[in-house]
Length: 601
Image (cartoon, rainbow, N blue to C red; front, side, top):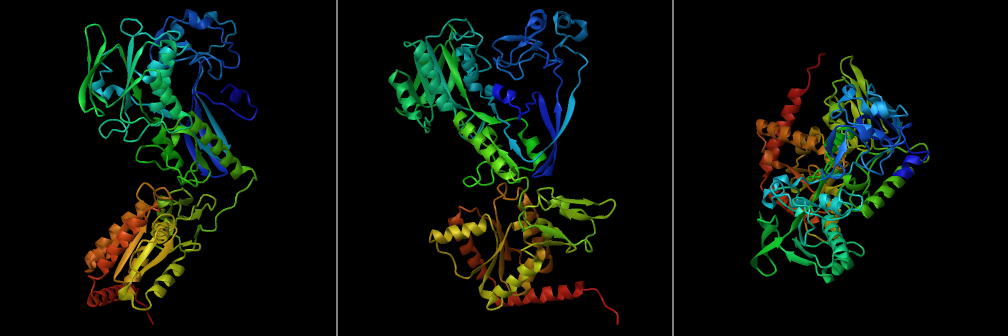
């Protein structure tokens, strides 16, 4: 951190928050609010005279409340910049002014205010970190009731040489060194009831490291670890686990169901040992909860600001888990560290280096190449209704609805999903390489002969079409009468494509794409879902069986699901009679004639 602070090409803005992001790759406009420190960070020498005279005392956040600090303080010893700051919510202000009086450099300024900073950048790396799970809701472990039950973070500060006890482990209740310590794993992880269902990745090895530290300082200490599974998957991790067991650490498979405090302040832990199948009771002087990790508090706010995707666990979703593990779906934005998912220091450093390399690769030429698959507005047809701007996942379209100025597409920001073209009611948007004419021509060709025997399928390029490929290479069987039309996204499937297919004699139509929340184009498939729902209502109103139009979410790895869906579609096709197809064609042709405007001679 100190090296970064001294680097001439790195500007570190502490106590700052990104409040707005606009623009696109190569031209992001960032608005930052830098909170006031009330201490001049350039002139402060960190002498500490101010904190000595400050009368206000509050719990120290860095030591997790195990020690205290003053209202004017340095957050932690290695903080950058190495300057004091004042928490004005705690400070008595000019009613006290003792720090102001003793400061020889005159660095303290009570009149300071927040500063707004605007910067223009070419790419963004999102590294928002993590938050430890709050175990207060897991009352069965007694964290809020028993002083000698501590979290892994509190334990870390207690055994740290720079912590409140200078590295001496003591029980919080009576300040005595414990003779036995227990660790409960997966607190806030791998649980459907409380916390997250995911593995937090770091807890097992953090506990193993802690047991080794304790055994190094107190070889005779009794240590027990209560666990579900020990996941020592990294390089050298299994060796550390084996070493911990060889030093006498007991690993008991099973999580405690009850924790009670005895008269002497020690903890009695009851658990079902799944290895022996017996209920066991263990008395321990101290109990440590191995906390899981969760996304940082500002994750969702930043996600909305940048137009990113989140996994069901609340972490950011990468563009591709294997081929683009640090890229977001929005071009020019990358991920590093626990913003993308739980990971340890080594993985975070690796991902940070990868994100930096990806950003350099994108920006080093000074210009970027835009993909040819982008939308284009025909201004003569545009009514400036604003629908295209509303549905664009990347905010690549601007339109002045009030002044009726036609829409404009920023081709650098456009990713080519085609949702805007499908939603435009006036035919004012052309999707290059996936135009209306190109797609309707494919429909005409595929249904030119024996249309009643075919299943017409619109397949998303990134998921369902790739799923078809995967089904093929996996030699999975599915009906041979499936006819695929590839689109970049299911959001490109216009309503008129569906009606055109039925008018050409299609018995059934399938629209397929990425799973909700996993769309390559952020949330474009949400509009697909809404559009198909509207078409179903129109079909029912016109006397056409809605079941003949199906919507299916198929990922690139779901070859089996693709095969099963296609088999289901073939079964559905067989229920459609020739008369039903003829009636549908007649209804749509009559509807088409009635919708045409009258012409005068």
